[in-house]
Image (cartoon, rainbow, N blue to C red; front, side, top):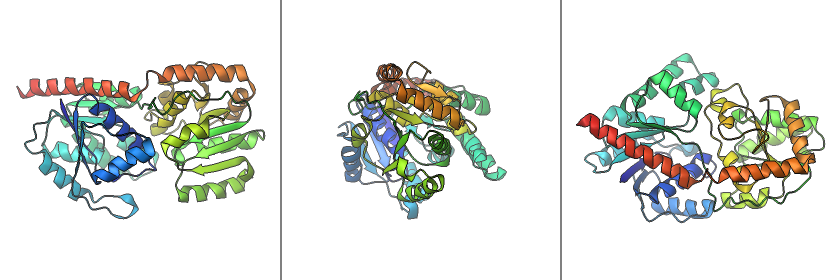
Length: 387
């Protein structure tokens, strides 16, 4: 099988989606021929994969750079790249086109070019727009954009069951589908937790408003015994975080590490008492539509995990088995859960063992297998329809 993949944004090492894309492309290329149409030069892609992810990309992955105009703030002038992709797809003998950008997928769907389209969904744009408080007209435009994708797609992958259910309900999609959550590179993220007892909690990820960090900081304020190692965030985000920590009187108890290559994470996490993922429950993206990369990496490292009890997390973690879950948005409940894990070595070891065992079925190899199965079913359905 020959798989085409395209993405119009230039690589941004600070965004988790690039970790997921590169590792998934690498894994799929271990099973099929893959051509990736991208906005970066090949050497930059391969340097990022080597320096940040610690991988040498598969020889079955071909990288083709399309014309792109990069604007300020790391954005791309979409029309230039989109035109180049449309030309590249005309008459291609490939079997399937796999996309995860809603704008790019909608453009291809409306253009009616290329092989059968498999769309990898990460959220419902209309609902996310409402969560952000955007004007109703913008939410409606996103609904129409997504409707054009699902009306044309030969197959759909969704990162959570809740997201797939919403796609089927809102857009009446009935074609080949698969729930394909995030994954972990088990060659990098191996069990390394030292069984440390103490009071150091870790959070890894961006500092966006929907990540629940305000709840984590409030929990920290209620539990003076705890300290926090916060890994991630742009320089602008970190500056804002320093201001917030000063307001809360937490400066001396929070270590701000900033962004680091993935290869450094095991060394920064092996000595913590536990890791935390404090998603809020009131937003669609956090409650139902996220498959947090860091949860899988915590699992791979064999860390005790404390996480919010929201549907998206429950698809991966089970309380008192491979994590300790608490009521989302409840700072007191989070503080109690963190203290429980930090002060009960037997519980921490049991949760760590459960997390490491669960990670064995969450590799990028498994993710690639699910995608390949979907590609096969989608191309078969496409041939049956055209026949």
